[in-house]
Structures are given as C-alpha cells and as structure tokens.
Length: 82
Ligand SMILES: [Zn+2]
Ligand SMILES: [Zn+2]
Image (cartoon, rainbow, N blue to C red; front, side, top):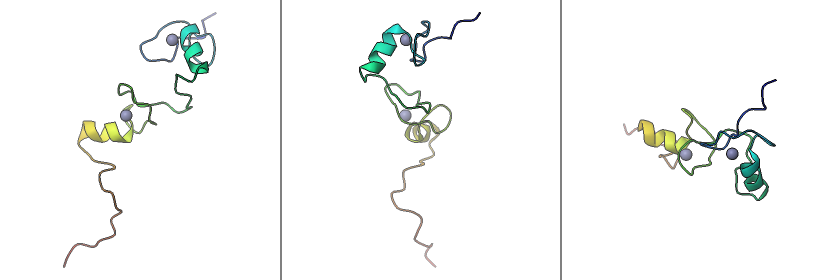
C-alpha cells in the first residue's frame, strides 16, 4: 500500500502522520504555528493568504503580474469625464 503521502508543509517531504502533516509539523499545527485554513495558501514566502491565481494570493499575484487587483481603493463609481 502507498503511504498517506507527504507532509503538506512547504519544503517538507516527511511522511504524514495526521492532518496532512508530518510528526514535526503536526506538532506545530497543534501549537497553532501552522495555517489551519482548508484552502490552499499563497506560495509566497511567509504568506498565508488564500490563493487567488498561479498559487499566489491576490496581492502577490498582482505583484507578480503587474495587474493590481486590489490597487483601486474605491469601486469604479466615477464615470469618465465628458
Ligand atoms: Zn512536515
Ligand atoms: Zn501572498
């Protein structure tokens, strides 16, 4: 039989013991040191935001692509000047 897989923590390939984490990371998870979110998180270093596209959160996706998804503070309420 195949194993349960490898730890879902970044750069960790130990065997899973619980919650998708290896022994070490499961301990961290229980200690509240790991993100508990069910969604996949941004792959940017130390970023735990929800993924948006390309394995990145909106912020880092915008930074990477140059498309500022959250740059405009206000909704497009103003019509172009005549
Ligand atoms: Zn691990
Ligand atoms: Zn991010």
